Image (cartoon, rainbow, N blue to C red; front, side):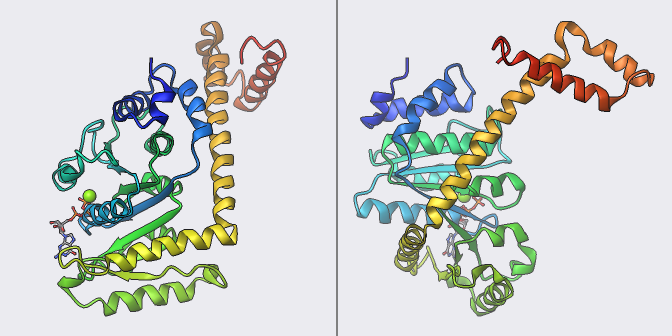
Length: 321
Ligand SMILES: Nc1nc2c(ncn2[C@@H]2O[C@H](COP(=O)(O)OP(=O)(O)OP(=O)(O)O)[C@@H](O)[C@H]2O)c(=O)[nH]1
Ligand SMILES: [Mg+2]
């Protein structure tokens, strides 16, 4: 049996096993998460997204070093929605981040689509909670910014970095609009490879067109080169400033509340949906009903209403819920 007390003491193996349980949607997951929940809410979650190969993992590596320099415990979740691999480490990340493997203050985990039944974003959110309770003060979530699931994942970050490169073909227009909108900080990495001016202007123009930033945090741009080790300190400082800004302005509180409300409703929806299907197919009645619907002897509108009515009638005696 996995013990939450061990997790809270900082037992790495317990953390790893709990994450596996979550990924596999294993028995006792809900109970475990509800026991963990009171011990969460302390970590600063930093999302790192952006074009493939932009240097997200390299930057993550630098941020780990920076956080460790301050003696802060770090968790890293590398999420790859295109990979079926989970539980272990994705090759690229493994090679680069291996040097931290022996450091007790660093926990690195890769996640792919395998196992995460409730969706990758949901699994990531739950894993963040485990790492939070485990004592990680900083949790970095890395994912390639290409699809909707990455956007969903980034909603759970307190500070989101969007990593770009100065190279041609990487101009703002080619980057998905959704990704640009979730940025709290832009990072132009690989500054050593080219002039960043064009990219700086593009970002500034895009921000100028958006009324969203009036009187609020306007995403700054950090220019970094992991290769030449420049700009990392500035980036680290911007991350700290963003956290401070969101804390003072109340935006952090507000987004935490938004996330929590979404979480509760999402989970309730899932449960209700499951129960509705159960009700719909009670005693194998679904086929008969589908026959009637197909032959136009019944209509979906009335059937939907009946389903809801029957469903609600089940609630008072508590048998179904
Ligand atoms: N010249 C240069 N190369 C860099 C820099 N940062 C990273 N790289 C190189 O770019 C390549 C990709 O770096 P990663 O850190 O794996 O990029 P990523 O965004 O995590 O890649 P994916 O996770 O595959 O999307 C590697 O070969 C890095 O060594 C940089 O600042 N300058
Ligand atoms: Mg990577």
